[in-house]
Image (cartoon, rainbow, N blue to C red; front, side, top):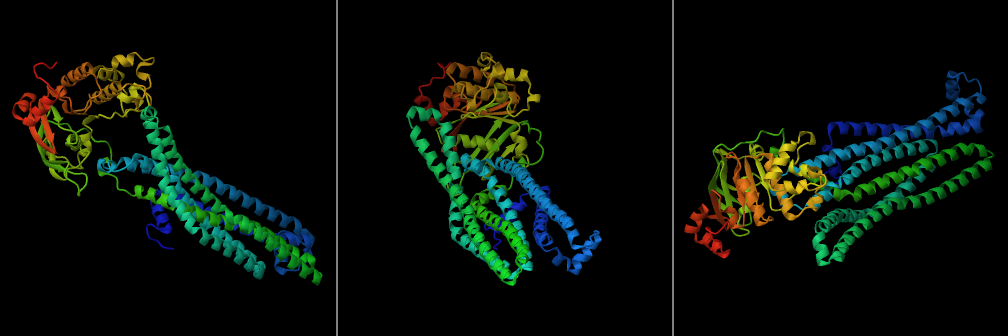
Length: 611
């Protein structure tokens, strides 16, 4: 079998490499248990002939010297005395075989659950640990769909074990049958093998197509669900319920058809082989009994018939399990490959290890010739940025939409790495070694608000364990953000739920909760990305007053389109086309920067009359 990474053998090797040493040991024990089960099956099958013989022809069996010697160990002195010990032995082997099968079923139910948890958590952790630039190129629905396909990878591993064990058991059963009745056993085994190999060749292409369909439709289905629920307001207002349902129905239909085809292909050979197997046993029984009848020894054929009947009962399910496992592996090949690709992604080194102490800014943070682009084949998003933000100051980034303001903020927060130039904090370059500590000193309030489906306290004290939340600080942050009165008016106050994505709140309330979260964190650098855009003028003025009144230890960098928002800032950076078109105070820019003056005139703003 081909061992390249994208082949089934290669995928299985990659999958085992993702398991912890403990899980690999458990799989080793499972393989050992499967082999014990195979041995129990063979022993119970091999005991059929002596069991039936001792019931029908005890004198014939007693005539064997080896049988008499073994019987003597148990105090058996004649042929009649063999019936009880052999019956007990046969019963014990049947019970042992049944117990081992139950134990295998139990382990097969428990181990995939544990492995599924390990892989899902690892996959989610690795996904979150990727650099921010990677996340900007990925669809969240596709990522969720891949994480949801961990079961496909587990199915591949478990089916591989079932396939291997079935082949071992099948070989052992055939060997036992061949030992007793070589010609008939080889004919039966060869016939069954030929049937399954033929079905395998016929279904290979269909299973591969189904695997690709499962890989393609899972993300489509997830995207339709996410966009439908997230855009419910627009769907209702634009009356586009049916197109969204049709999109989901198309993906769901393809997914279910592929799953159904796989299920049918897995089980179809069973019915064919069962029918042929019964016919084969009927004719073998006819030939044996006819021959024995002609020889006058009909009873001599009974042990062989019993062996063949029990052998067929065990062999047919074994062949079917092997084929179904093979079909299952083929059907999940592509989804399992997607899961492995994500599991093998290197984790960003800055996310490893314990959380560092926040990297407090003592003097300033400087951009020195910083340039960045999302794709090396694309134009620069920001180019040759050089400026400084002093500790305790309030700096605003203004300019036209798409000019590079948000990218500049992402670079400042260490979410993106400069392709050229360097960012220094108190003279120290910002690198992978200190980026996490720098980010721990920053609170970010974006234009798009992310809220948990929890209480006001959960959202303000974001990510803080319930036992460690400071209620007084929560109330203080809410008051400074201008949301305390709204919270106090709810039935459960700070324990009131905000709904999924804050659906029970207005846009302004969601934004103020977001600002309260940043204030609660007590960050040394506060980055506001259009944080007050959803607020009315009065509330914005109150929030800005609170921000301007923060301790001198807190540095604020804000992105704003409303020029009234930035009038009181210590420094304004006018970013246009990815470069700094001007910098200074509001009055300095209006006096010396024609472009900034045009912005002021466009909104008819007058410095003296603002208020």
